[in-house]
Image (cartoon, rainbow, N blue to C red; front, side):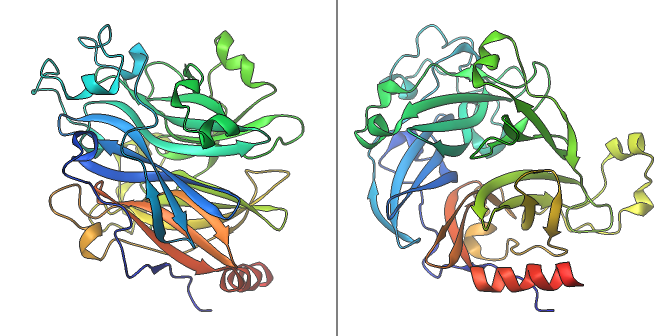
Length: 362
């Protein structure tokens, strides 16, 4: 059986930092992707030269042509849980991102940022755009947060209309890669999220529960595989509906971690290790029972090889998928390359369907 392989766009990187724009001169990567009409919208993470993480927006045509890119962030940190404590009472506008009172000795975490809003995922439902992301204030563990905006306000660039963000994951626990499914299952909203090292699942009857002390928890539903390329950790990247199923694009890293002693494994059980590379995989999930995996790629469909994926100026050896859309019979996957660029690759849906059918029959 022919292995699925992501065809990377020859024009990559699709989006790269513009050095004249201070709020993104430190990196542009990890984009959420969604379609409205015939356009693809990429809401991507951008890091300022003094390590504040915000979100920017680009509009894409035919999957890989940038036709519009906004000149300022569309979403900035506003709450204490996403602002460094010494600036929390003063940070109220974009201009303050570049002020001198932000200490130069703050610790840069993943993606080179010290605090802010990170790694967005987007779900469009009815007349709203729901945004889930990682909120980090430079002190406490990164946590999942949520906000929303009406479609009409989004299209009219009324960024002040974003709802007040709320935390949706537990305190004191690092929780990332929060993906909200695009429809209810058995009357409940379903969320995938990552508490190291597995993909967890939880569900809520109403999103208002988060305003009353409800946090995502649930259970580890999709696990790592000790003898495969995704043995050390995995996380949900992007999810799209397809033929009454869900296609889940995810990331995986191979190798041993001492955590696995708690699950009864030994280092000898982990036969794959390749220097902590972030690679891209693919699953197909049952739409009525989203934790039921119908197909999972035994091999990565993409791994860091090209210059923009091993860029030594940033974090090398990273393909971090966070957005996917289906257009004209193709699955376009958008990913962060080396925590610095946005890149894109594609798969034919016919090719994908054949691979899945062959695996299911086998």
